[in-house]
Image (cartoon, rainbow, N blue to C red):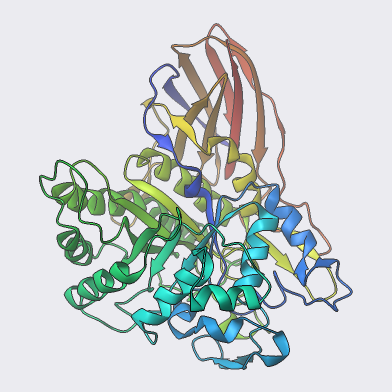
Length: 507
């Protein structure tokens, strides 16, 4: 096997922007078996549940310390009418999920069930409102129903449905993908509409809304500029126009042939590298959106949100293509690790990110079956290994020497990715080796603070195609990893296609 070396300097005493815990957010859409059969099994299920919510899924996600959960979509959000999902379950009207397979849903999982799920998870709710087929009044009353105290028609309805006290719900999405499934709008049209919706979504009784405008696909900078013109924060000295507090964008990774073209498990070496090139390009995309936002909001009062990201492969054979069920390999885990390094780099502007999706859909954390089986995916383990970065201070990482880049078409791929953060008396360093056939010996110069101990874990397997199944649940799982620490220098040998974290104790 080939070998290479790298020299990286980490300045532990130079703290940068805080890595918001919300960069580790999640997404649960009414799509395939994410909600029904994933989170929700119903009160009468033999699978252990609390009020119909599947407890082994809840326990697994609690271990990740997930900070927020986006719901009900996605494209589904712009067909969802919240009043159909409250009140006695037997009285709730059924609906057709026109975006995802044309299946009928009974609306048994609605607002109260979602809020109960967030409470069990210890996660903040991120509610995505219906702009495409809904009304301003409908969304305004949903905000009121959830967050208002005192008395009003919406409050009386909430109390009649069994909840006296309001919830705290900060995060509200103003529609979804308005350029596509959310209405096929022009940017200026949506910007005006988003401002209208945001205006009538009020702060009630101390619940301060964080309104997130539905943003661009990939690097559509004109869309972001239209939204930032609405905020009109150029040269502002106090607060920006009170319209929305963040703009979003969506970014999916594939192997260069396009979304949903190729399978998750069967891929060539070239497809592996093309996937990593596409994943790495989110760095350029975030930087470009940030530059547009900086022109209108130099104080960075408005946040950037990537509320859909992840790999998108062909649905598994024998499954409903519209349900977007895909396996999850070590390759997907490497995409996640690379994304997080880039998210940390842009923490000054990027305030939230939500992987698509949490259970049984696209790049999922968890795969379940109807007999009670549960599989933790390789991507799940990256989230768990990286959770120490949540709300930590980013610190500079300088790559002084790096392995030779891999030429992939017209692109050059750096196969080593690194990020680091500190929190109190600890630090966490994340390392990815994207190469398929090369060990990399990494020398980390840990400067600025004394390091008294180091503990490392690694996620790897014999092949990047490796994945977990119901009969082999730990093919890809973290294990202990030997490193050498002495005189402020840590040395680690990263095998091919591996993700590792090193936890440091600081004096």
